[in-house]
Amino acid sequence: MAIIDDRSPTRRRVLALLGAGVGAAALGTGARASGTELRIGYQKSSVNLMVTRERKLLEARLPGTPLKWVEFPAGPQILEALSVGSLDFGFTGDTPPVFAQAAGKDIWYVGLEPAKPANSAILVPRNSPLHTLADLKGKRIGFQKGSSAHYLVVRALDKAGLRWSDITPLYLTPSDARAAFEKGALDAWGIWDPYYAAAEIDGSARVLSTGQGLSSNNSFYLGSKALTRQPAMLKALFAALSEADAWTKLNLPATARFLSAETGVPLAGTIRFLARRAAGPVTVLKPADIADQQRVADAFSRIGLIPRPLHVADAVWQPGAAFA
Image (cartoon, rainbow, N blue to C red; front, side, top):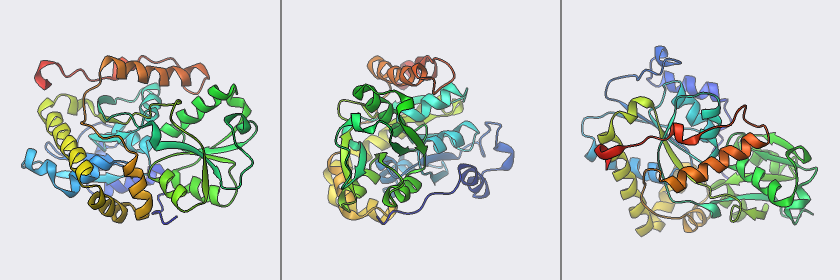
């Protein structure tokens, strides 16, 4: 799979961000680098953010606001940067904010995209003897700790009647997991698109289970507390992201070519990723969304993977009349 390597340690990425222009004094203080700069974290699955950047949809809505775009390998690294004040806004799956909230990080759910259960999967090697979720017992499963794939594996074990102690979890970034998977060091791999699509297309993997029936695979936008005090900026962000989503739906071939060049994911894999991706505007969280996310938090609390039970609603931004 020709996917760009992103295996550098998280700390190095945060320091690289500092070197790119975020003052060292901001690390650990929560302070913004400047009064106007908007710093946005994204990953290879952040279609709306990458299209927004490419088409300059924010520049028209936030004239005079400097924008800094920073890529990360996965959601946990984005939320680490957000929590130490190196980012203002970022995109993650369902699990990273649960782990961040459990660690006492000052992060806020501000919006979400439509659920994408078909865009995540547990993969096994093409010739693997594993054919059911129950076959995962005693096996080595790789995934990014604290990512949406982590929750997918938890739910898969629940469905199979297995306990967390029945598997050997190997916590790996997507690129490290890919390398281990291809070398035969993993029996299974929990992963999301576009990595999932790329593994399908090159023939190295077989789908043991998608997220269908296991996880909503929600995608959230999270912000700093300072950003939640700027409803006009959030409104502009969501309008631009929703425009990007609509443009993508109408221009799938052009979007696939751009994203393939941008991410290093082969074009065929990118096309498959976009074809099964649910489209729809970015919205604020509704009660049903909060309840769905509470189930994610409860699952990790129940098996002791986070230190305490959480009340997800405590970290959900309530926009009120100013945003509506």
